[in-house]
Image (tube, rainbow, N blue to C red; front, side, top):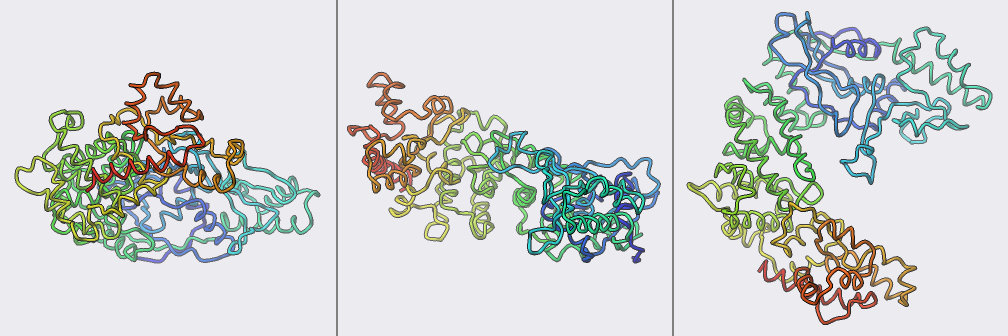
Length: 580
């Protein structure tokens, strides 16, 4: 391995753009956020060291022996966060990046591409939630952040506003400033008399420095490895990245798995299964860590901890041989949980899926498992276990200590029913118990709208709902009516208003309601909506029983507190019936 003359950023970006620099398949994917990229550019402008890089020169005879990936140019948090496989058939040689991918990708995106991340308070499936952003620098004002000197920011086209304190320059345009005089020519045209002398001087310093850092100065120091042995390269990669700070351990293990598989690409396969399960139903939030952990458990390895020793050649080949069965069980488990009404917002622990996937793997469940009527009791057991484990937060702390004994209970010959009672008995008397005390029951009624556990608690009350239809968590007494002005119009005093507003989001005022009725319900007062929706006493009685609405009490708005307290008692009785 040799230390080489430092390269300019422009030179490296040009080579990335021409696909002369690629990523080996053992590399993880891009994970930096915009703030990290902005800090990287601030460091470059201040002549701070950004660490060296490690390049692997693959010669012509070996190029076709390995897989390589292109750098991401236009990163999109939802639709374009995976690297594209590179075509190397016409390449004489390739330079692969062993260390420095995150920094080089950041430079490439900032100078040649865009970065799209989700806006807050917009749904993840809303395409307008991910506007494209480019990197800009404010030429006339330094950063207001204490630890930064230069004001770099990823902005959309609509966010660019130049005024007396801001002049935003698109950083990528510096690549077009070939001559040393180019910054001054640009500033003469745009930084005019409306800016103070101090601002104009700052702009000269800023743009000149930016050009020097990107085009003139060799700032990317690197080592070059020329060995053609993948084993040696992998060992170097592990040695560099096993410190636990630069590369997450699961990324490291995925890299090892990728190098060990013989007929499939572990990277491609895992990316594919992650995308597939996350698009099931209303969407989930499964990651590669979950897939790797599930693969170890479903393969019945005695030790399934995340450590290098478990990702040896023998184990990885066993996973590869059983990959189709493993992924089928994982997908089926997510589909089953989706049929229970869960999604990325309500499944509070992905680890709860693993015993379900393991059970489905063991019984060799078919796709019809979800819709079949012959296994209703089995699915009831699975659902109840899922709900109990989520509410009890069984997978907090050390999840392996929960997964291991459950796997032992499922891993029996001729098992044909999910072992709910055995699991409950196994953890009885431990800090992972699934048995509910009176205090636990009472605590269930203190969960609120918007908390991830609330859906699980409410689902206990609705065991027969068909969640193939869309259900909403609905405020029985509409939350929109609990504004102070409306409550005052209802004649409530300050103490009553405080109590009303405190109670409105608790379980006692929540129900699961199908989407269409919930939309139609809108902001009608509860009594008005009930009377208009259920015209006969029989229909009202059926609705009251289904949703645990206390009968023989007034349903008018001012009687909300009595309604809430009476319904809370009904819910506690139902919880005791189901959980004790």
